[in-house]
Image (cartoon, rainbow, N blue to C red; front, side, top):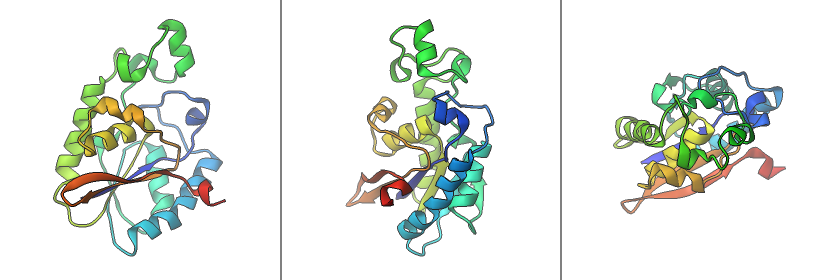
Length: 195
């Protein structure tokens, strides 16, 4: 198993900290540049291998996949969609905490949205159906909270353990199987680290 997780590039809402689940938001100009700058990093990680490429159905993820992995055909995978934020869609953490002091997504979830366990089950389904047993690398172009939960589940950790990871826009992370164990090989690599 080799799972390469790519978070989409910057959007206006990711820049302002708004929870963006189902809302369709375009990449900013900077987000497009971030995605383009991922291409040589992904090329190096892939080392000439052709990945199986899956992408969330949200246009910010689709645009990132097209810019970061030109020449590869992406399969749209609904299981890679971002956490369903329900009533908190479009709100920042600070705005939510005015309504619910001390609110934390990893503990409290989102009213009318998905639970942490439901998102974890989606990640499990993706891993079981599209990653385990696949020859060669699998690339998943997805979102901030979901990418963290996906990584936690791929490492056989609880979905809540996704809180231990950070996820910058246009970042690349890699989980591999080494000697029968899933290990974190690379986390949250962005092109700006090479500036």
